Length: 437
Image 1 (cartoon, rainbow, N blue to C red):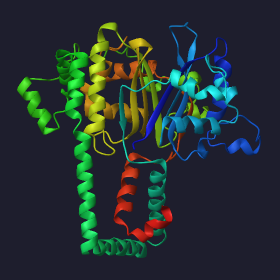
Image 2 (image 1 turned 60 degrees about the vertical axis):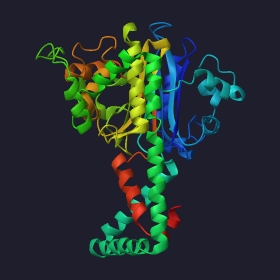
Image 3 (image 1 turned 120 degrees about the vertical axis):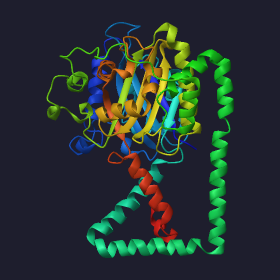
């Protein structure tokens, strides 16, 4: 069962945004709870007690429909198990749920929290999961095994390498035994059937999209997404046959004024301060992983096209993407898009590796046409879209929402670390894996 997600967007009582923001900020600045020894009675959200939460964040998101200074509380998480189990666990890890959720309109106490979540939960329109079979415990188990092997190699490089090679050879000999070979064939066959069953609904996805958005909209959205994916042979042949390509920029110069640099504009409510002075929840690129939360406007005439693009991305992510890679982008753990406010805005939530700049650059390099397909119809997007990368980065910065809390169950880990840990666990003998199971 792949990890689930919760995207909760709830209005905040008027005048209580600042109080709630400070409450969350105190937790975000010490998300691991290291300072609780000094004040054990302080309000805290004990994410570290959860064996199921992969990533979680809290943020105050603008609520322009209710007023210029109004905000909503965003809670977004990816987790193992059912939504009901996650909501029950979320109540247990918060020291005082009423103190947190009581700032939100419609909250009527812990007894009605499940109903409150159902009322404000937003299902994603497109979702990508790097490892659909990777639970928190499985990821941490494989990483622990990898760290122990690395420690062995660091302590004695020559002897440690000889030991690892012996383990791998031992497992190789075991796999050549008739019974082990049969088990291996069964496993590979099961995996092949699983991949087939995963791809099988692709045709039905296309039919549903055509019925919902119309064949012309689906066709145009498909062309828009595929325009810069010529590195795939089938797509390259298709693009040549239909003469599909990205339109040229209207100007050879960026529309971004020369005196503005999106990468140096600061971040969140602490804008203008020295990054070294910022609390952890306001720093970007402080750890191996980062988050991106965007809320952009949608032009009324673009909603239908955006819906078709979301359907295509969701189908691609679920049916065709190999583990750890979305169209060649290998730094994303989770990403999802949610069309909110009756189609007037698009919310994007991403958990990724590396720096903000590298993340956006990688998207632009690997699937530039996809960025244009998603945000080409966004309010105040640059005229040339992501093709004008400096202006596009500035557009993203202006609509980026800073988190008050950002939590990761494995903060020092990249998707490539997870892939290598899984491969190592697959190749080592079973008796070495028992202590980690």
